Length: 513
Picture 1 (spheres, rainbow, N blue to C red):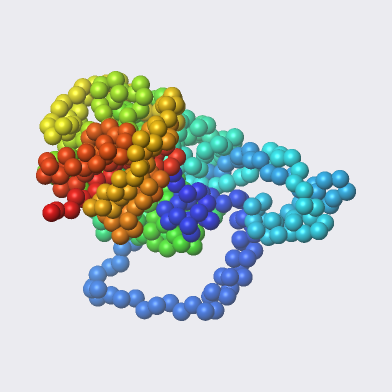
Picture 2 (picture 1 turned 90 degrees about the horizontal axis):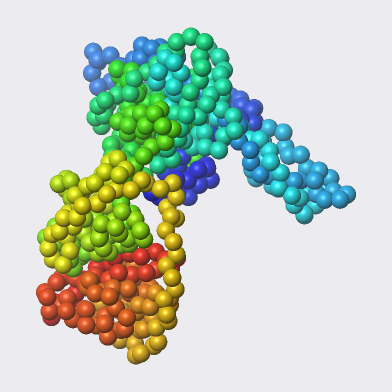
């Protein structure tokens, strides 16, 4: 599961970004600055004319919905212990305390602390200091269970929840699920709380939605918009709902409601080149949230099935190199040592076509299908191997907390350079014998105008397999390419190791004639 950016600075670089609440001290500074901006804005602003599609039609009102659900929406404040550099400046230096109202990481603090008389050019030891942040959440049961984002409470040493009537209570973290960015909290209320229901049905694109939350520490803020899209991919196997209701830093973990007052999503990310709202926000759909919080309430964590493979999509060329009719399914590029797949006999270059007779569309579909199955369950996996179908029974493992759970492979003896370069002109490649621990064949040159270059193959990449055969010398690669041609395949598949131990499968088209 790709990682999500986590700061306003990262938003401008990377697009989809967790809406992390800013330091609460920033709110105070922003309020002073904002007062001037608001006064200026009012002098410059003229309301636009309202286009009426139907002179007799009444514009929708969200007041009744908001009045009903707002008591269930909460503001969340957290305290995290973070390490910061000592600014004492060393012996004889003047201690720089920072500019009041600005957070520690503000550029102005960095500017002044490095001036003469500031930090003195020497950083002191790292110190633990508390840092506060804010987010949103909502009550899902009258006895005090509250849903929010994992990134809102991640690493928090203290969590407090406040309601619209200003009542503030301590909260306990029941469980978190980083993969969906969902967390479940528990408070001990003095009376039954107003709770909201998670919708069982996803809204259609174009339907009205209302977001309620705590942007920039301004609790109880209501914004409205429509569902802009469904099934957005912003990283990981799960789909997200896209909305255009205004969502900003501090809205994280807050609910998006439909017109019936049901929660259809949990706001978790924004897309913005500036760090502020531009009308593109992403929410975890309610059906995903419901499954996750059910497990968190029972055991504090989410148990997912795990296959123990690295996979990638099958494009047209890969399908052709395998002899597959359709470019569907997911192909295995690496099998984890001692994992469930290895124990069941799954191999690199196996194309997974179905799980329990359900067809697999692509790698995300496979990851989602396996993750939705319980750990320890035995499943039937249909693979395409050696131009034929094969069904293997696999007992799934438990999805690990860390992706780095495999041991390093023992170093293989070095391969001697048994021959010079071999030129595979039709593929746009030149190859030579490898000298690395994995042996293989090194790509010594890539034609920048070739299909191989377009597929991402680069000089220095190592070919481990070609056309479903292990290769140790350039001659092995040449024979494999010729065999693919003789078999009438439209492309030849290479199993390539790139820098950083990443392995991928790439199919390069074979030229006719």
